[in-house]
Amino acid sequence: MPISNNIADVRRRMAVAARRAGRDPAEISLMAVSKTQPAERIREAYAAGLRLFGENRVQEFAGKAGALGDLADAEWRMIGHLQSNKAAKAVELFGGVDSVDSLRLAERLNAAAADLGKKIAVLIEINVGGETAKSGVAAESEELQELLQGVAGLEHLEFRGLMTVPPFTEDPQQARPYFRKLRELRDQIAGRGLPRIGMQVLSMGMSHDFEVAIEEGSTCVRVGTGIFGERAKA
Ligand SMILES: *Cc1c(COP(=O)(O)O)cnc(C)c1O
Image 1 (cartoon, rainbow, N blue to C red):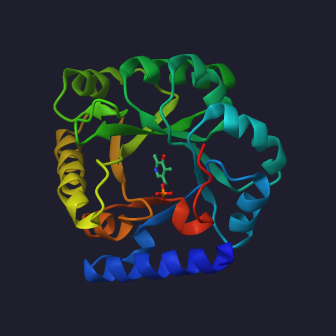
Image 2 (cartoon, rainbow, N blue to C red; image 1 turned 60 degrees about the vertical axis):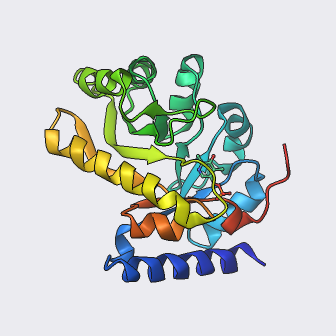
Image 3 (cartoon, protein in one colour; image 1 turned 30 degrees about the horizontal axis):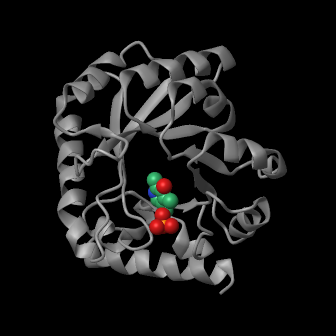
């Protein structure tokens, strides 16, 4: 199927899920996860109207960013695990990092953004399932508290909310408690009114479970396979 048909289908399903939950579909954004996709495929998604793109590797995106530089109003986000030593390169390439999981990384990003005279949008990635092999900061951890309370001076970062990838389950309904947990954590953090910590974004839901995520309050779904088709195995 052409990418434009896939996008129309995803949007339709997003709208149905939103209405089922009594939500306005317009408050949920669709991020095209374009990792492993060549620049031409990304341009196709852009031509079909998408403007928000997620990539998970700094090196990979560095290799194709040049071929996409003319898409001036496209927004590029880093959604994969980011090592501190790649922070500067990430700030150069991306308008935002959705996978901030430590104060140390936030400090590196802030310093790099200050050097470039840039502001970048960030989300805190939460490891809702507490899986050891997964990135993100644990919901009930000292590290999360340290991050939330340590960002006061990081003026080149704009904290906008939380992101998560729940444990994989065949049945998307089984992801529901994790999505709910992220929403509750968001509400709890927002209620504390911490300086410089915005909590308007809940980035959750991927190709196989975005409808459940929308029912649980997602404001941004990240869809790769559902838009571009199956990825070639790395
Ligand atoms: C790859 C990826 C996605 C998209 O996954 P699909 O199942 O292809 O929709 C979403 N979020 C993150 C963090 C990813 O790495």
